[in-house]
Image (cartoon, rainbow, N blue to C red; front, side, top):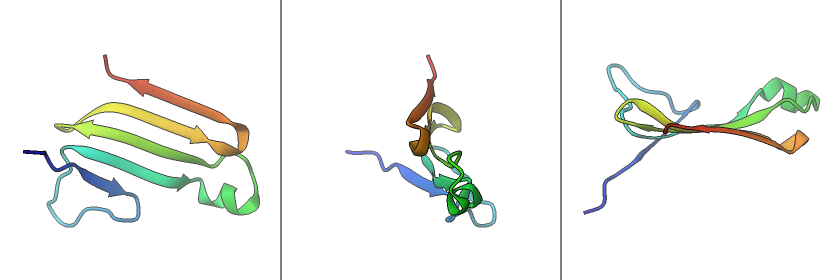
Length: 73
C-alpha cells in the first residue's frame, strides 16, 4: 500500500496543534517584494521532511540561473 505524503506551503499553514511529520514544504516565491520590483534575488524553496527531520532542501534562483541544494547523508 502506498504511503500518503503531505505538502505544506507558506500560504497553507497549520491549524492549532497540527504537526507536519513527513512530506514536502514549498515556498513557490520567497522574496515576493524582490520579485515585484524586479530584483533578481527572489527564489523558490523546496524541502522534504521525513519523521520531522529535513532530508533534502533546494533553493532555486531562476533570475540568476542558480540552484543550491543539500541532502542528508
